[in-house]
Amino acid sequence: MIHLKRFVFNPISTCCYVVWDEERTGCAVVDPGMWRPAEREELFGYLDREGLRPGKILLTHGHFDHVLGVSSLMERYGSEVFMHPKDAARVTESNIFTTALQLDPLPPFHFTEIHEGDHVAVGNLDFEVMEVPGHTGGSVAWIDREDRILFSGDTIMKDSIGRTDLPGGEYDDLIRSIMDKIMGLDGEFTLLPGHGSETTVGYEAVHNPFLVPFNEPDTRWWEQDGLSLDGR
Image (cartoon, rainbow, N blue to C red; front, side):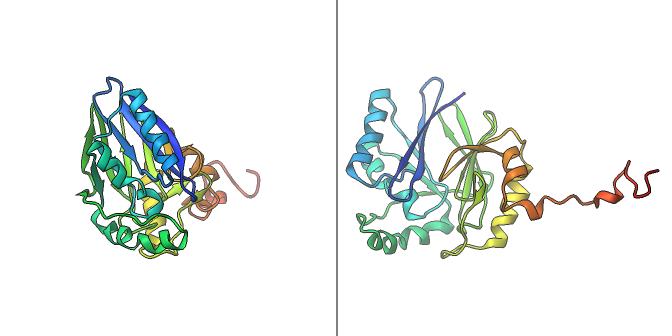
């Protein structure tokens, strides 16, 4: 069974998740976006108080607001980083944005490459890699099928979808990733996004305004069984 704690960091209000298993044999951090020293101390203090040592860092993509705290976690805990190789360029260009926002420069870091269908164990938890390009070329979602949880990054959020106007973004790819992969999951799957509150696949399938054009039935309503135009 998964346990998790959500934090919100940096000026972009990026969600960072600490996850660990029931027996506390493994711990990981998803998208560590800590920026200010106070944010780093908030996360480190929580980990230390709970006796958690994050051996792994799971990145949904390489945008600066999701990786600001990677190097500090690696330095303190020796964490191994997992990221799709297509987003290495996003990390490289991150300092364009950190400079513009007057943030500390982002140090480079090494990472282990991940691809569709790979599995990363965090203690007794199993996280499967789902490639969901669109927001960036290397965006992934981390899926815990046993607990029916998906860390969706910036691909889909409650009542919204990720932007595609930044380098590496592609709208058509984003919609295909959402409709062909994420919306194909059981409606009770919990989505834990990179920004905003948690939601579910079922809620987004019905309510997300950006997906409405893609939710039309294959059969027109007047041609469906049990319906007629003349009342018979």
